[in-house]
Image (cartoon, rainbow, N blue to C red; front, side, top):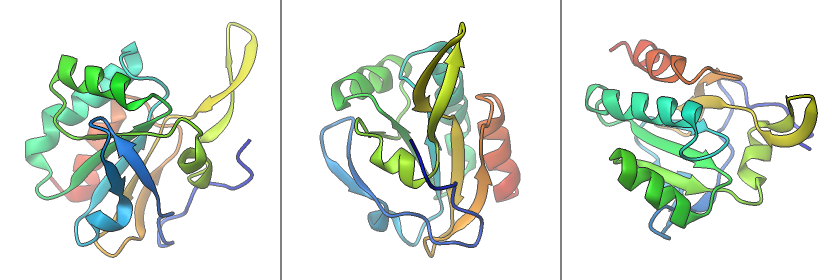
Length: 155
């Protein structure tokens, strides 16, 4: 269980290196100098995650040089299928041990049909060009993710 809370605006974004949908290592430090939207979602190709990811795909041309990075516990092969099926066109990262999710305070107890379990609490973070959290949206709804990003960017 995550024993830390989500990083607050103005604090340094927790660093990470994870495999993307193509099996390539991607590090947050490699994106320094650009704004980065990091969004955490529970499971590729489920209704809410598809709504969220396709919503971000649909605004990708409106966010300038801002990188969009999705993180879930799914394996790279599953992320690749999700990307290909929906023509997402941005980086999806695999966090099967949920270490990055825990660093961002988005791994926690969830409940469905009365059953409690641990999982990703859908959240998003906008990281500025210097690697600091500019905006944090804990427990965000899938449809609000693209809207909040556009609003934060002034688009």
